[in-house]
Length: 108
Image 1 (spheres, rainbow, N blue to C red):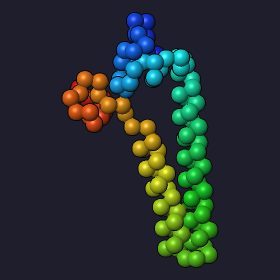
Image 2 (cartoon, rainbow, N blue to C red):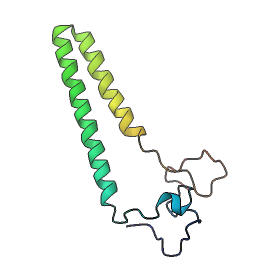
Image 3 (tube, rainbow, N blue to C red):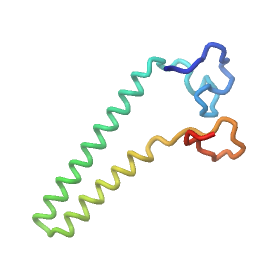
């Protein structure tokens, strides 16, 4: 399911709702959606790898330096990765919103 770009001029707003001109947003980009899916899959693999490394580091430090240090380090890394996963790709602003900082969370 791609964007309908049949009647969109280069200088018109992009139909994705980003607020950017079409020429600066989606003109000339892949329309099949596979590139976006591969990027998300790659980001997920990186996030899982960092979380696993943080958990292993926490276990090692817990065994050598004390449980409280291991739990603190491992938990901190896992929380940081979780925050990165949640906040790395915020939704675009509303297309017709009066507030320029309005974020579209799917509501009307």
